[in-house]
Image (tube, rainbow, N blue to C red; front, side, top):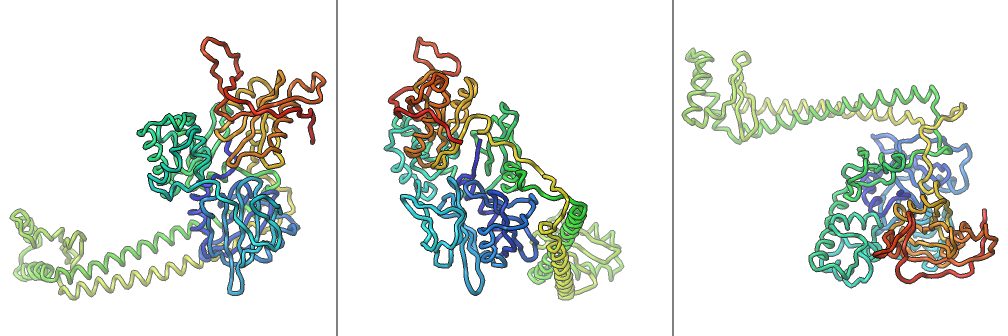
Length: 588
């Protein structure tokens, strides 16, 4: 199950967020557990909420949450420096899982940096990029996140293939001796799902070896990388949530466009990527909303005002379109001045000679049959109004036969001016209605009644297994029985993950989930201890045991020819990496 946004998701989400937030103002900041929400006001449009969950996601949310009565110190500082500041830009940093929101006014500017990888972080920087405050402070091998130090972005994990040509991509991946999927995830700055989709587009098995690809296969792979990049550049198209039919139809992923790898799964399409993520994550109990009668009435009034705005906008658009048509008509009359003159004078002369309108109509039709160019220009005549409709360069123009070409053109220009004037009035009405709408902000209304949740988020997919988060922030999962062992190995082990097993009978399959950077020795040790402790070693009274770890491509459910493999059992091929003398112990 997908736990967080990939760098591809963030790249595409930026289109939605930038469009909504550019030049808007941050009105307030709220924290609900691990979730932060910026209340943003866009002049003329009203307010919306930008949700940031460090380590997980960023998107616009429609869920209303209960604001804590007493904000914490971190949020109080954010409010002090972000409230009423204009959003100058919202940018993804270098195709990484990092978003930088720059805000400022005439006196100062700050940057809010959201790190959406690993444990996640949220940092406020001053105009010199010095760390003012951070959600988490930490010293690491490649950088330090400490107060009063200049913020440094983490090192790039891989190359951005979408900025490369075919030859550069070939030079990057062709010399690999690993599997195709491992090569892509290690050498490109892409998540494993995107790399799996690239393999599907190329018609190549993810587990096949790079060295086994012929020239045609390599060309297909490079072409698939370029095609996937083109989809990203085009932006979101039919964002969707993907379901796993085998597991009670729970959602297992969200994607910004159709992924071929999910063709066999049921899917739900949304109008925006933010809506898809809003539905996918839902709302936890600590983020519950209040639904009092006062709020219900305000919600009804908001919907009424929105409907009025839509109708006012339709009217304004129609007036502007009418003005454009009339202005074009005036210009076309002068462009085809002689033709218009001939048509008007011919009809006026016929009427002066007491020729009936019916006779004039028959004469026009005869002229069309004889390919008379002037007659072919006439679309229709309206005797009751004394008007004739003519075709001038593909646009139908209505002429008053009692007026000269100059007078008809002048009438068209005057009509355009009147329509534009009315459109201006309509726009002012729209602004007034939007101002009323912006004043009806229900997020700050206090209510003493018990909160009622809009939606309760389902349990995380891994909570049905044994699991823990390592000290290096990696998710480690283990089976509870033979059935869950098989499911973990078959359904939840990705190409970057690490498979562990205790060298003891009756041990669970254990998997370290690796989104990008390989885990360190500490995580390997903790996962090995997890595997040993949940084996029969505990029941057998052992105080320590051994475990080993391997890469996913070394794990197979297919036995050697002529041999039998029990259901759920696996074969391990290649070298095993042992972790020796691991204590049998657990911590809570």
